[in-house]
Length: 313
Image (tube, rainbow, N blue to C red; front, top):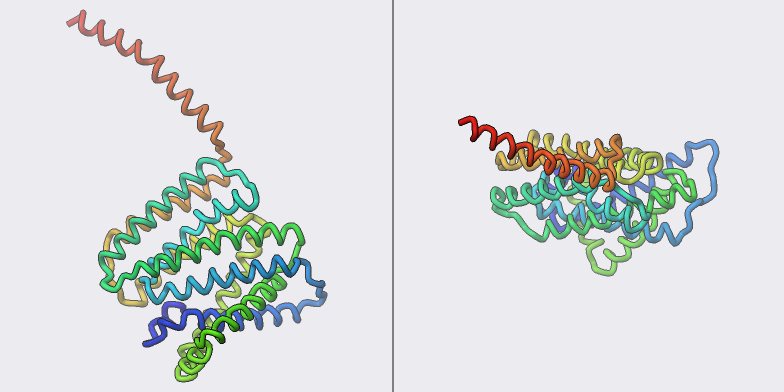
C-alpha cells in the first residue's frame, strides 16, 4: 500500500504528511481498542518516556515514508530488513545485553547483502538518489533505539499495547503537526490530498490499519521475546513484501537483487539459529584452540608419513 500511494503523481514531497495521517489513524484505532476493553488501567509509563518514544517513532516512520520518494521500494524494504543490525547495537548500549558470535555473524551477513543490493539498485535505477539511503539509514537508527526503549519500558512498567500506541503516536502527532504548521507544509499537504482523497486518505486508511495490526504483533513480540526477535520476525515478513513489489509494480530487475537478497536471508537464518544455539565467544575460542592444536599435532605425523613414502620409493 505504501508503494501504491507513492505512485500517485506529485506525492513525493508529502511523505511527512502521510506520516501525520498514519499517526491520526493509529490514535483512533488505539482509542477504539481501549474503549472495547472491559477494564481500563491508568497510564503506566511516565510521560518523559513517552515523549522520547514519540520522537523516535516520528523519526522512524517519517524518515521511512520520505525515503520511498527517493529509493526503489525493494531497496527501501531491504534496508528495513537489516534493522536487526542497529537493534543489536542498541540492545548492548541501552539495555546492556550480551550477544553471542552468531548474532554478529548474522549482522555481518545482513550488512554485506545490504551493500550488494544497494550497489545493484544504483546500477539499474536511473533515478537512484543517495539521499534516500541517508533517510532510511536514519530511520533505522531511530528504529533501533525505539525497539529497545519500548522493551525496557514495557517490561518495567507492564503497560498494555494500546496505551503505548495512544501516547507514543498521540505525542508524535502533536510534534509533527506543529513542525508542519510552522514550515507551511501542513496546508500544502491538506490541499494536495483534498484533490486525491481516495488515493491518499483512502489508501492511507488501509495502510494504517494493516500497520496498526502489525504494531500490535511487534509490541507483543517485544514484550515476550525481546527486540532482536521482533526485528527478525518483521524482517522475514518483508521478504514477502519485496516479492509482491516486483509482481504488482513494473520495475527493472537484475540477478544481483536475488543473490544479495539471499545473503540477507542467510543472515536472518543465522539470527534465528543463534536463539537455539547458545554459542558464546568463549565457546568459539575453545573450538578454535582445539582445532589449532589438532592441526599442529597432526603435522609431524604427516611429515613422517611423507619421509617413509620417499624411502620406499
